[in-house]
Amino acid sequence: MIQIFQRDDIKTLGTVTYFEVPRLKSLGFVNHAFCTRSLRLKKVMYSPIDLSAGSAGRLLLNREVVASTFGFETNQLITMDQVHGNDIWIIDEPLPPGRPSLNHSADALLTDQRDIAIGILTADCVPILLVDPARPIIGVIHAGWRGTLLGIAPKVLDAMVDHFGSHPEDLLVAIGPSIGECCYEVDEAVMAPFRSSAWNWQGFSRPTGNGKWHLNLARANIEQMRDCGIREDRFCWVSVCTRCNNDILFSYRAEGPGTGEQISFIQMYG
Ligand SMILES: [Zn+2]
Image (cartoon, rainbow, N blue to C red):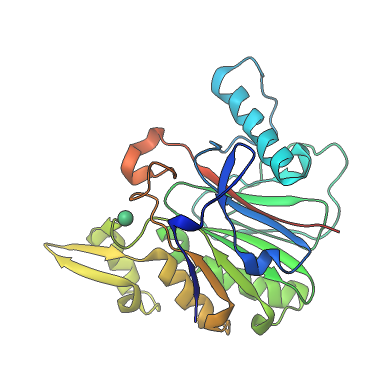
């Protein structure tokens, strides 16, 4: 059975409120969190940032807050230039000292390196954290409807098998807050490609009449990963809708383009 977490499971550490999955924590070598809107982050990478410049300065500062709260250095936090595609960035050797510009376009990141925290930024899309305790390997996935349609999660699992020799039955998957089926209404333009895809779209969509549908993106990604051999009891899901819980989570649907993004990260230590 999938282990489900709700809004009441929220935690606080310092000034940061976040969700965590005890099963990952109990592994004893993984640091992780699905942060809430107590920390606003945007896709600002390692380009030079003028600290005096309003929002960019604050964003850099918030990276520092994430890092100091969860026990790593700011320059250990690696995020991507997310583009709603299905490219995977694999980091399988130590990064060069000084962390040069890392504006890397991808929507998933896999690593066997212990000195970095890998993160994704989301507002309604599905943040997914992966651990292969047997290798060990960690990964993050950003899955919106486009990434889900492209099958980014199965593609990442294939990469774990092909590149690192993972066995799907060893993997643990943690899914963070995203827009729920309650609030994620889409039209024919989104549904048509799902209907013509190989995915079992009936399993994660519900027609509401008048040409609209409600999609359950988290469920879609779970189904895709189950089809790759991950058992249901290996999934943990913070089933908290970003739009319904817009007081604690950023939601593009609730707030529009001006909304921020919450960060989810994972790191191996020790
Ligand atoms: Zn909702």
